[in-house]
Image 1: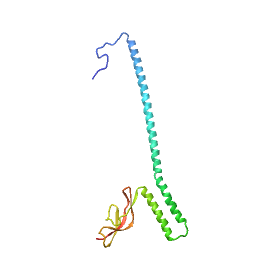
Image 2 (image 1 turned 90 degrees about the vertical axis):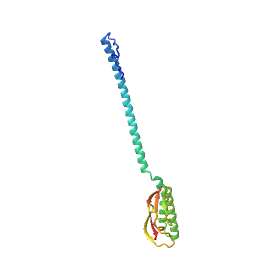
Image 3 (image 1 turned 60 degrees about the horizontal axis):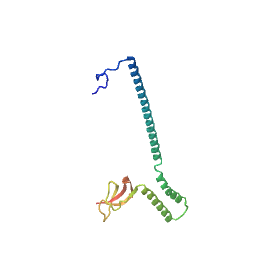
Image 4 (image 1 turned 180 degrees about the vertical axis):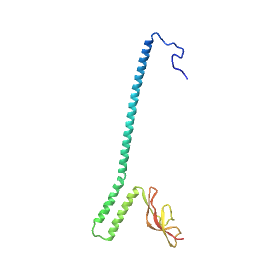
Length: 177
């Protein structure tokens, strides 16, 4: 390790005037202290500024996340408004035959399914397919001549998946052995 003390290197300090030397050293040290204090103040100010900037970013992020949560369903709900209007209009009509009411309900259902599809939700249609316990829930077994055992023959309640994740299994009846 290197020693930076000028007296240890064999040099003799200029001791022509001890008061002059200590006054010069004192002034030099005071200048160095002042320089370090200024540097310290500058660094402290930089740290405070950076801390304030991080705090502001945190607040902005929190506000943005809160806004995203509050309005996450806005697009979905805007797409559902025509379905709502269709149902409301259907209920407002007085009289009318059963066929036209069924047609209106069918169109409203198609509109609703299209909105759901646009947002990643699909119906599970298992009729004629083998029972898949991951997507179907068998509630009964029925005689179904000409159908392979374990094949879905009736759907009692449709199932749905959202972006390949099961929302609700289909309730089905399957063919007996």
